[in-house]
Amino acid sequence: MSIFVKSPIVELDGDEMTRVIWALIKDQLILPYLEVDLKYFDLGIKNRDSTDDRVTIEAADAIAKYKVGVKCATITPNVERVKEYQLKKEWPSPNGTIRARLDGTVFRKPIVVSNVLPQMRSWKKPIVIGRHAYGDIYKNVEFSVASGQTAELVVGENKKIIYVFDGPGIVQAVHNTEDSIRSFAKACIAFALFEKIDLWFATKDTISKIYHARFRDIFQEEIDLRKSDLEAAGIKYFYMLIDDAVARVMRSEGGFLWACMNYDGDVMSDMLASGFGSLGLMTSVLVSPSGVFEFEAAHGTVQRHYYKHLKGETTSTNSTASIFAWTGAIKKRGELDMTPEVVAFGNRLEKAVVETIESGIVTGDLASIISTQNVVPVTTQEFIHEVKKRIEK
Image (cartoon, rainbow, N blue to C red; front, side, top):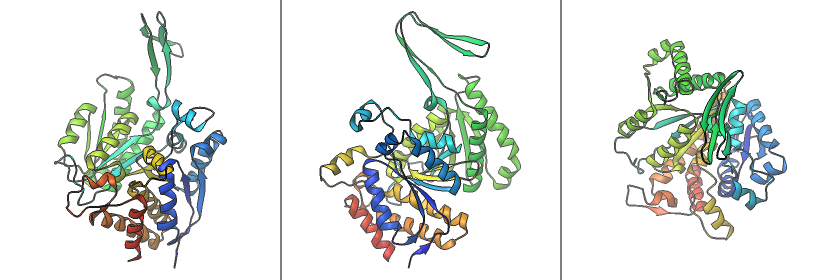
């Protein structure tokens, strides 16, 4: 008998190998067990191109309406992708569009299994990355500059010379808003309180004495406003330079939330995913100040495996993070709807995945890093089938 899900979940389909996996997960691990209204949006690159990317805006607005979304990995096209898929132009990152639309902060957390040991011997607990998901280079303006030209920054009546070029060069401008920075700080504090873990924040304010320093000051203002809550929960806040934070992370035992500016969070989340085992073992959730949640895998579309799949070759693609995107959305939907049986199913599916990996049945990315002897490498489809067998039990 299917479990009834009271409210809809917004489903955002994606691209390449993750799109193939997405369909397998939905058809074999979700729909046979849940009676759920999925508000479907196709964010595959061809549909984004044919709709002039309107589908991405519509999907973000649907998530804002229903409060919970689950997203497959998608292509952010470069010049080569434009040619490959015969696109109208290089469309922006759908993740970036959705983050900006929802004013969200991205939190990434490793999925810990007993037989995948972290690369850093000191890491004993998960390290969560909180990534500010607005502005910086992801909303930049940039130019190639010819020899003899001068780059200037003009804001109202204020003007500064950036550089006088005596040869060809490049120039880039980035921006941010105080509202976005403040929302980021509030989201990180709320997430640290929810997880009951310490909170780190780092910038390069010794070099960027206005831009980065404003991040530092706003974060401290929001910390001060929640000081009593943090103290009551036993949560400590640490501010440091980003290079100091990187060094400290390598020596730490984990168990904290590391709040990062946009680019830092993008890069460091991949480093932590690899350090804890694999990008296939990393969850990702976008959280907005209004209580909207969008869950996805932290990795990309697995392009290389997709090309093999198109040739009819077998693949061994890790579906764990995509499954956990679904379970995250399912559990949050059940939590918001106050339907414990829905939350319990999400937990049961996650347990089935972890037990499958800990039994030694794994995809190719994990086969070489499993610490136990009984390793059974399996294909993409076989792994999902093994998870289904454990759900049935």
